[in-house]
Length: 252
Image (cartoon, rainbow, N blue to C red):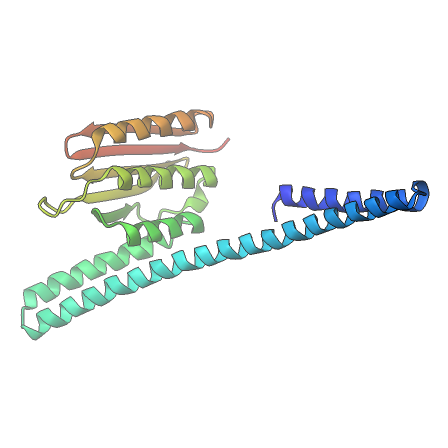
C-alpha cells in the first residue's frame, strides 16, 4: 500500500475524530450535529472506498505479473518442444548430421539459460528470460563472462536493471523485421572489469531505424547524466549494424 493511500486514510480517520469531538464538546444545535455526522460518514466512506480500490489495484497488478510469468514459461516450453520435434524428425529421416547439429544448438541454448540464472540479480535474470521469450524480430544470443556474478560487484542494482532493460527495449523498438532478409541477430555480452565495473555490450546486425535509435539513445544518455556519471553509454550506428556499450561504475 503506497504512502499517498496511507495519507488519505489517516486524514479521513483524523476528520472522523475531529467531527466526533465537535459533536460531543462544541455543537449544540441539532442541524449542526446532523451535518457533522454526515461529514463524518462521507469521510469514512471515502476512506473505505479508497481502501477497496487499492486492494483491487493490487490484485490487478498481481494478476498482470502472473500472466506475464505464465507467458514466459509457455514460450520456453514451446521453444523446447520445437527443438525436440526437430530432433525426432531428423532422427526418423536418419539425418544424423542434422541431429548432432540440433543437439549442439539445444545444448548452447541450455548453457545460456544456466548462465542467466547465475548472474546474481533475480530481477535482471527474470528480465533477460522474459526478453528472450518475447524477442520476435531477431535471434537473441547471450554471452556471459565465465563465473561472472554481480554479488562480487558493488554497483547500484536498480540502476543496472534500468540501464540493461531500457537499452534492450530500445533495440526491440528500432529493429525492423523482414522475412526477405537474413535472420537478424542481437548478441548481448555481459562481464565485469576488475570486479569494479559491469560492462554490457549489445551488438545488433540487421535492419533497424537509425534515426530513432540515435534519438532514443541520446535521451537515455541524458537520463544517466543525472546519476553522477555512474553509467557510461557509447554507441555506434551504422547501416545494418548497431553497437552499444554500457559501463556501470562501482558504487562509492
